[in-house]
Length: 86
Image 1 (cartoon, rainbow, N blue to C red):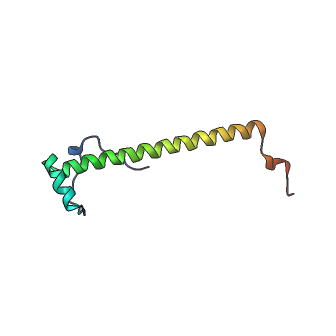
Image 2: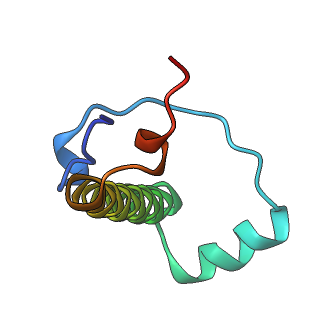
Image 3: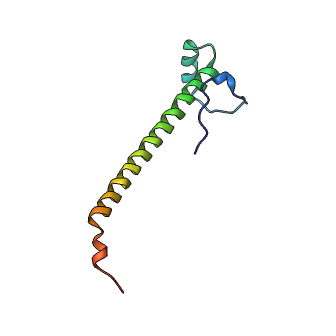
């Protein structure tokens, strides 16, 4: 399971990374923020949380589907049970 995203950005270790970004987009973003790194980190944190929630939701749906199928199998059995190759 992936590591959870820290709730506070300041509580984590930081390191420089290289990103390739559209020059015009960066210029436009700088109009709205004085700290582009913090803004990008906040946006990336939101993105990672959203992806983790999506993954957890899909896993819950798959688990529910498997549980339902197992319940049907337990009450009705399997079509294959009637056909033995032995």
